[in-house]
Image (cartoon, rainbow, N blue to C red; front, top):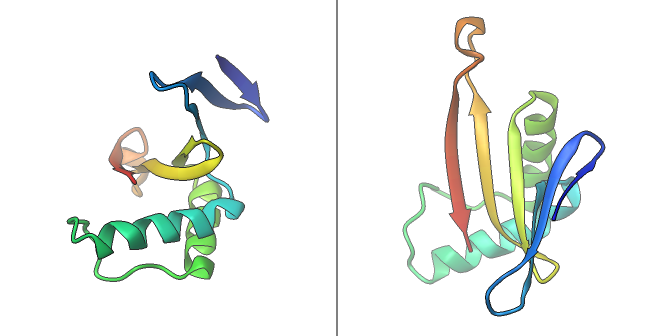
Length: 107
């Protein structure tokens, strides 16, 4: 079911195994789950384009900057825990504001 909250779209559905899944905008409160999940991927030896893991404070700051810049930073919440992210970072130049760079990670 897609709903609207504070002008953002939120999509909630059940996965094939019955798990609850929600795709919604990232919030400052998601920082700990995001950092923990990225850390677990790196420990497993899975390739990520990261030289180091952000601290929770750095992730909170990043989420805030994404919101202030009008970029999209979505969380994929699996059974109440942020387990994936997707983001689109808009072009910085005015002539490229209609373009974006997409990246995603599923934990």
